[in-house]
Image 1 (cartoon, helix red, strand yellow):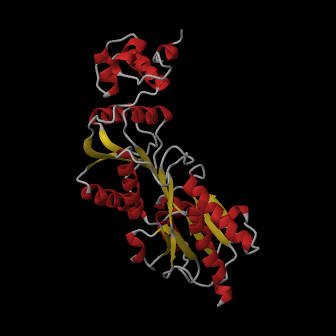
Image 2 (cartoon, helix red, strand yellow):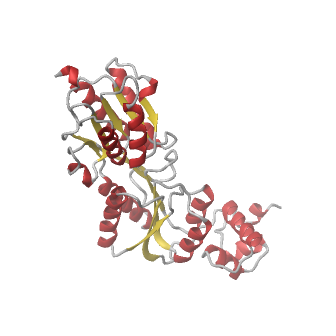
Image 3 (cartoon, rainbow, N blue to C red):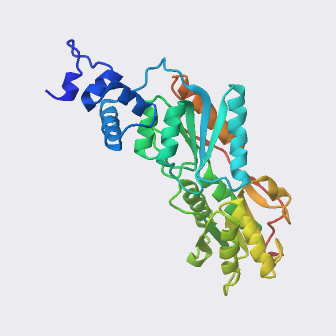
Length: 347
């Protein structure tokens, strides 16, 4: 008789897994299973792995009546820009309305939280977890699920899986709108600074740029598309390389505002004026863009509302109710300021 057969009741119905049954199947004591479930220390690695495997195989879930702590775990891969602050504001606003505290974890550029973070979260037993631009492993997601800790991802770095609720923005439409704006001004040599295209948000913005160019019948020249990084340094380095070429672009679309700020500096060093010699479009609409010199044309991403929406979804899951949508994309909007103008030849 298999272990799964042993869990059938006499009437043929599957019996609910309990701590005692997990202990019996794993060959350990019930207190040991409780320590593993609650993320506590004092359990040998091999024993912990054996218990986790039994939990995974048999679909254990913490009983619905188990109390969670009135905190919300918010995980970021990095906290190096106003981008993160806008999301935090949205999360905190909704959390405050529901009397939840927010615990913030920054992974210093890593996309996946470490073992210590997982154990701490299991010990704290929060109301839920929001992972921003981060990537929890399938095992970590299973650990949260078996403890009835809901998870919502915001701007996931992998493909948004149907079973993992997620929030994003209309990145493809944003890339399309930015490029179409430049085409309508008369630009044709339009460059694009991308981010890591393995990330869906970056790939979608690049695809939007390509779609606008294709619809206008303007070929995309390979040398005008540069893989870059999503920081000022990326815009400075790769914008400078574009401007130093034999046929520099008359306009550059950037994957975020920090890149665009780097392009501003690259243009200054190259003796090019914005927008007279070079048009620049950012993406995000962070607060500094309206004060940059000149004020930056950019694609507004509703970051605060994205944070609020992710929190609202998490609270629905924590209440045991189903979500109306497991994938939510909020609209982007082109904000035209003074960093874009017709190219010189069109004056």
